[in-house]
Image (cartoon, rainbow, N blue to C red; front, side, top):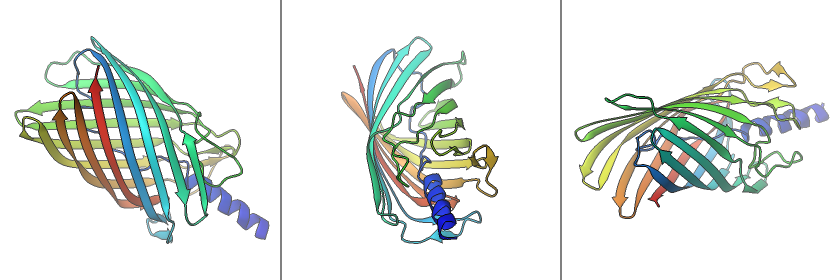
Length: 273
């Protein structure tokens, strides 16, 4: 019984710590930008004090989860094409398990093509998350996931006078970790951001983010009642400062199911070469 409990505890920890926490679309993510090369950084902190069960109720108190991350990104715009690559560096820690992991994260690369619409910008993108991140199968907490993601995203951008809308629909096909034989469960994500132009160089607005996954699989067998779901509410404030732009993002997990519940803070910079 003790051995079984340890196995279940390890699997549970692995499932909690191989998910991407709160995220949201930012201003101009789907905007048809001026041709050229852009360098972006994303500095973020995610803190979660508890995990939830399949009914959305508290499963573990005092979880003390922290994720600190710095993502470096290059994006190249040429006519209707966009190519991008993201390289993350970060640190994750669980006070409950007293385990940490840090180093290089899972690199993401891919591209997209703006559809020929004049009234609004529509950008389908195809990206792949590579299992390059720091990973140790003996740990219950890992910064890297040791599995591939295949991601299809549809970005939408529309501006009317001082009002703007940024939206994203994303499906993540999440493949199996060969070491643990765990598939985290595919994810559907819907993200939206309304903006109001406060001045020539500043805009702000509320943000919503929703994610729902399929059941996880262990060695190809579905784990019952393991679907994850989160609903997060927050907002962005954007500043255009020559020669770069700056965006502050905050999201609070209003609802969480079978995952960590917490708060997400991010500072994004964008510089055009």
